[in-house]
Length: 73
Ligand code: HEM
Image 1 (tube, rainbow, N blue to C red):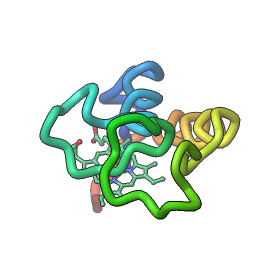
Image 2 (cartoon, rainbow, N blue to C red):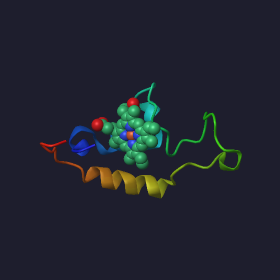
Image 3 (cartoon, rainbow, N blue to C red):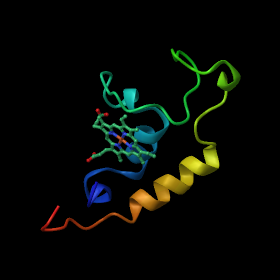
Image 4 (cartoon, helix red, strand yellow):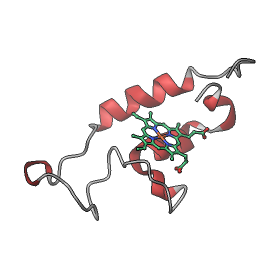
């Protein structure tokens, strides 16, 4: 993940977290904000995203701080 903000735009990072399948249809990364079309969701969690929109923005803001590549990555 080091330097991810140097490789991806803010919009791409947001999409990756909200619904990674928008960027890679075969992604195994769980969608953190999509609620439609999911399988294997706990019954009391149906319709509830893993992260709220505000929480997604917090994650995106953090990812945007990861700008520099590290030699030891
Ligand atoms: C809050 C938790 C997570 C965040 C913030 C996050 C973020 C990201 C980001 C920014 C990328 C793009 C990396 C790049 O372009 O170099 C990525 C890719 C990826 N992530 Fe996550 N991720 C999370 C959780 C997970 C989990 C739980 C899984 C798997 C169970 C996962 C699986 C993957 C995979 C396989 C990729 C490669 C691209 C793809 O297949 O979509 N991620 N993730």
